[in-house]
Length: 219
Ligand code: C5P
Image 1 (cartoon, rainbow, N blue to C red):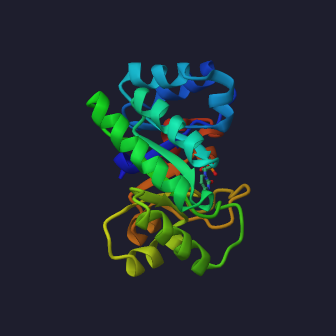
Image 2: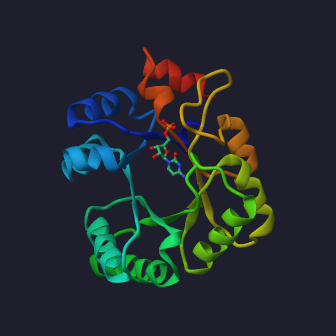
């Protein structure tokens, strides 16, 4: 199951991120770079992960006019990003422009197209399952490769959307570990059984005295 785990590098500096990348690679192969770390460290963090042999999940949750998002996606292709997020609430025109930009830029550069993942509703917010399903359908029908959603929603999405798509699930907590601000948590096993393809874990590892042990405890 470890190959499915993505470490959320929710940290404030390149040095802190390096500590976790060196400690956890190759047990963890995909590292999520979000708003905090990207604002602090910039593209250097992407190079650092690639130099180590890891892959990058760029979680900047793009949400802007179609042209701006498309241009940002082209930059992500140039930086050989494995997967990235955008808000489905940004609308169909934005999503389609993103899909088109990812395809054309990766064909032009003869590199692998990044996986585009739509954010439905943040796991820190309460929501109605129908809203998540509606957004997920819009995302998949617009050509996204998958969606980000909680484990609870993953099962419903798998049963209601028949097409092949990826599910990335944050809010992963081993039993008995604090939930922080996450409202819809699940264990690794529960999320995989519900149909999640990748699991995003942050604080349970980042705040542990022994990050490697915390990773093992997730199983
Ligand atoms: O520390 P924790 O394991 O809660 O980290 C979860 C990560 O997943 C954070 O980086 C957060 O930004 C991200 N995320 C989320 N809910 C979403 C999408 C992303 O918690 N819907």
